[in-house]
Amino acid sequence: MNGLLILDKPPGLTSHDVVAIVRRATGERSIGHLGTLDPMATGVLPLLLGKYTRLAQFFGTAEKHYEGHIRFGYSTDTYDAEGVPAADPRPLTLTLSELQHLAGRFHGTLDQLPPVYSAKKINGVSAHKLARAGLEAPVKPARITIHRFALTALDGDIASFQMSISAGGYVRSVAHELGELAGCGAHLSSLRRTQAGAFSLDHSITVDQLKTLSPSEIERLLPHPRTLLPELPSVTVDDQLAGRLRNGMQVNLPDFSRAPLVKVFTAPTDLLGIARRIAGTLMQPIIVLG
Image 1 (cartoon, one colour):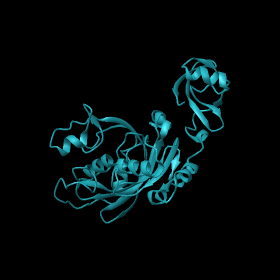
Image 2 (cartoon, rainbow, N blue to C red):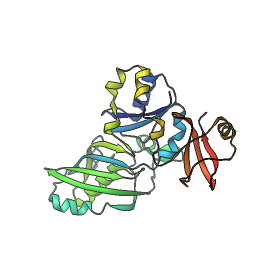
Image 3 (cartoon, rainbow, N blue to C red):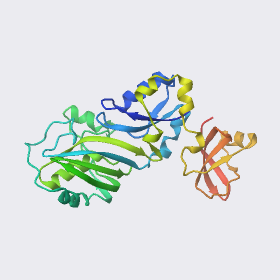
Image 4 (tube, one colour):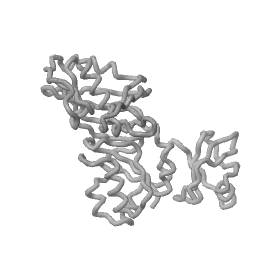
């Protein structure tokens, strides 16, 4: 089964747990998710199935959209509600307007320090594994972009927010740093991903719904291949050109978009792979799916 499946992840499951559930439901062994969601978080989790797992690199820069809640009063070691309090509670003394003013500092391109309890790799080992083993996990700042961070309401010590952030950005870190600016500490108390790239909750199904479907029913839910990676134009080739592309040869493709990358099809729904423009209409295959 080749394609992309959008799930609405429930709380309490890791992204790896969801992959295991999809393997059982579809019978497909090769599955990879596009952007980890923490166990506490819910929402859009795109998964590539079968040969399409090789396309993961082209989804890596997708912007993510979230909504959730930040609790002020104390920080935690994980920067979220699943962690251990890192300090004694302190009252929040700022108004919503004052917090919104502080939140304005988290906008645009900036260097963000990821949480120690994260999937960031340190010499090939996830930082959270080192931290839980009591070892030093020296995470390094990463350059990210926050397109939008809006605090929309304040109920006691809990603020509602919406955020759009680039791939690789941690909402938990923003919550933690905002708490430091507020002078009382804070942590992420809930998080829901509403969109990842072009895929939103409107495109998703729940894990419970997935479990009621047969593999053939699931396959019918997968988006049409030409709708994937919509920023790449599609080109259809004949058997001769397809054979040359499968052999890794450069070919002239009938494309007039001048886009640097194109999706190559052999039939309306049969994606052969991705080709890179060399010059003019001369293309070099960089991913061949079959």
